[in-house]
Image (cartoon, rainbow, N blue to C red):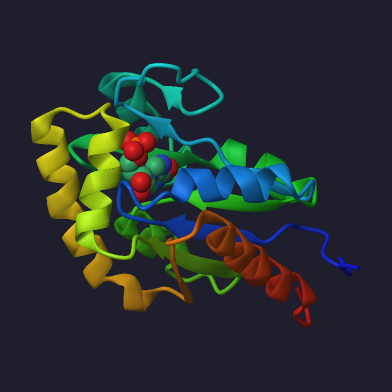
Length: 195
Ligand code: 5GP
């Protein structure tokens, strides 16, 4: 049984280098938990095959993105792998005020910007067992050019070096164990006093 005494939901920030398998973990955890929602980000990167606008991301060009930055529509935004990504305030607020807990998928800069001055956020870093495994997973995904792959691997090293600034670290070796780990973190948060 989960006791929920919160009027507003909690925010879980999940960061991971590309290829750590974060999406697979998040999909399973969210599918199994009716009180948890994924907050859809905006990005200037192009959709990958199969990605849908309004489901995976809000895809927009740089002009529209910067217009929204100027209108203060983002709670945080950052340049990641040469593209802009950001969390729309409207998307986050709508979910939290309906009492749902929310997962934000942010890069490390985004995590830092978002959590600065807020104590109500749980931060989780997901990583692969090694850089070799990460590279193999990125190559298997096949949707990245060699240049993009090299950039993502370079950025992965920097992100992994920042893992100690998170509340929790999950090593995604076996998917079902990583899913159980994230569920345990969420459950612990919900059982905490005053949450
Ligand atoms: P991808 O291009 O593979 O979908 O996402 C690349 C990375 O962008 C993700 O791993 C995540 O770290 C970051 N990202 C996605 N959405 C956001 C966002 O709203 N804000 C920030 N700061 N980073 C994001």
